[in-house]
Image 1: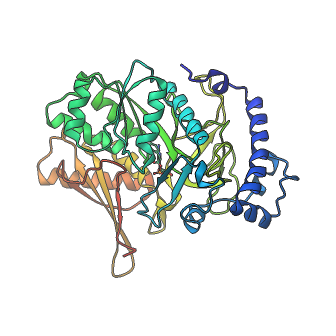
Image 2 (image 1 turned 135 degrees about the vertical axis):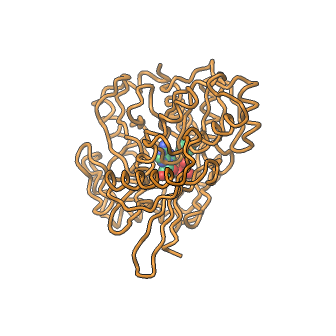
Image 3 (image 1 turned 30 degrees about the horizontal axis):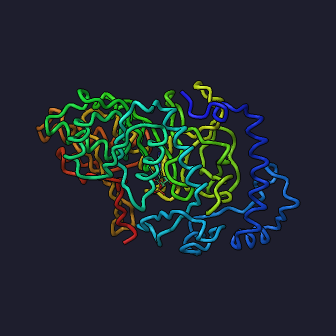
Length: 432
Ligand code: DLL
């Protein structure tokens, strides 16, 4: 099923011409309306009249999170605040908060993109969509809300938290689709199980999970536990919010190329990487009005796939996000993303879904990584010697697959912290 078949199946050549026109118009627009970008473009020696479009893309300067922080709160906006109909803001847990703004057209474009995504993973007007992403300054709740309503589905705006009530409403109102972070879905299904509710016996059919990295193995676990189809959704507040999803083929996230131009670069050199190579996702917003972004460094590591998808959509796809360039853990010289650790852990049946990575520095200056993992509820292990054997096996697996040395501690089910929104699975005590 398609939301806008003409656009979603637009021949690649036509899409490219469309992008070319929009990119040139964008450069003119920001040059004329954004003092920030006019200065940036001048510094880079770019004159909109000479800018030839896609061919000159790599001549354009990057935009980084620090630019938004430096111009806090609205210094990068390209329209007067009277044209802004909504603000969202980041929590600022990793630095100064950032503020994003939307014109009425920006909201329409955002909603339109997510409508395409929802329909591509099978959502229709027949569905009851429970939105358990947080509502408020976070873009997850409101983003899903407007799109699900526009698709014609019945929205149940529970927001995050109050898990007992979520499950009660899910049963009573016959929720068919849930949207939340994957870590909250794990918690919710665990809570349901403990309180005697079998999610397989509810009307729940699909889940749309994102806002944080999760692995293919976690998808399998969620699907097996709950009997639903789990889809990945990606977006960032700077680009709008949740925007792009997988389709029912589950082989990459479709990026709507009529509104967003994507590149993958080597985060160290800033050069574009070769086709199919892993690198940082960089996005240029072709339509956004209030806060257009040129070559926005998302910080997210992924792979780009330009081949047409089996579903018939021609727009490029990004593969599951591996992690953020700045989340990469370097332990004794080995680079590893927490999501790679998750991938290894979730292949071990005795291991539950929750884990915590703790990094310490010993007095001799050496880094030590400790990974706490919960024993699966189903694992029938209680002898100390068996736990020790399991810890050894996990450590060996991590060493053989990722080449990382870790101290593994198996803890009882239910011991580690649960999350309603984005999970925090790394504690780095080396910086303190
Ligand atoms: O997390 C927007 C969103 C809401 C996406 C609901 C999906 C669902 P921010 O709070 O600005 O926006 O955080 C953006 O979250 O740069 C990634 O690092 C991470 N992220 C988002 N989606 C995924 C995903 C929202 N599917 C940051 N996989 C991004 C991995 C994701 N990481």
